[in-house]
Image (cartoon, rainbow, N blue to C red; front, side, top):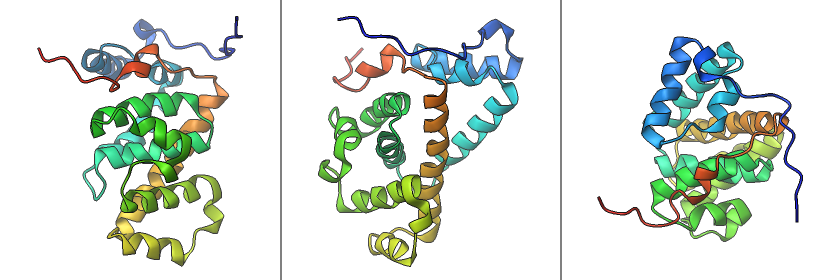
Length: 196
């Protein structure tokens, strides 16, 4: 059966044509992961937007706060699934599997986070994130109280909401440009790493 490929209306940028700062960032990612995630070359076609996107991404995802790296990726995977974003579910699902050392977690969260093998605290976190991602106008005091009951602070709520909101933007852009996940993402974190 031949399935039609997604139309690529917006071609990726050529690495050797990019400004030095962007090229250096992409090469650093390639050296660390062994490949260049498509999102980098797709967004690099507009250098100012690339810089702004990754500056905010890094401010949210790399900053030390009350959320673990794995919990941040849980938010990305669950909200991206709700927003039907294939790229972010697959790419961030791979990162989540690695951080959590759990080959099942990403598939569970992308399918139905309420049935996933996560803690009550994480489920409440995802309830809040999903509400921000899909029904933010309905956020009210009860949502904050549910977070507080699980030990989250108002600053944690900001972080949860900001990650959900940022990736809602990312999801919509990935869908707009028909961004497909790199094949490498599909296998990452599914099997234990071989010891060298």
